[in-house]
Amino acid sequence: IGRQDLAEDVTLACNDGRDARRDEIYGVIDRWVGSLRLEQVLATLNQAEVPASRIFSAEDMFHDPQFLAREMLLSAKLPDGKAFKMPGIVPKLSDTPGEVNWVGPELGEHNEHVLSGLGYSREQIASLRDEGAI
Image (cartoon, one colour):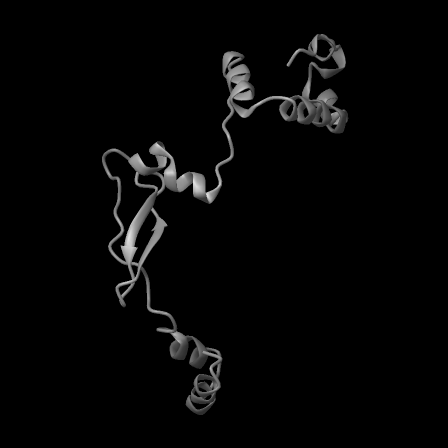
């Protein structure tokens, strides 16, 4: 990143030395990254063979060709027909890629089972349902 002084500093040759000065080093890195466009940062790190990637927002993921090609976000429908997106299978293995066959239980489907298991009576559960709590 253009800091030969840090590259040649013998106290930074080992992790112990870098850890002792981590706040300083993170500050240098933060200022360097903040002074450049993302593409420049990634190109510089890639050229130096430093593993790096941008951090994706949820919106980025929905438009990224790699996420889409690997089916990391699946289209599904709720029982009422409403469409939504859900996570795909991770990791995606070539011989056994996995698949999603069920979107999960309906909202509140297991309320009675769970609440009765916690000691609620049928009357208490009915009261919670009448009050709109469940």
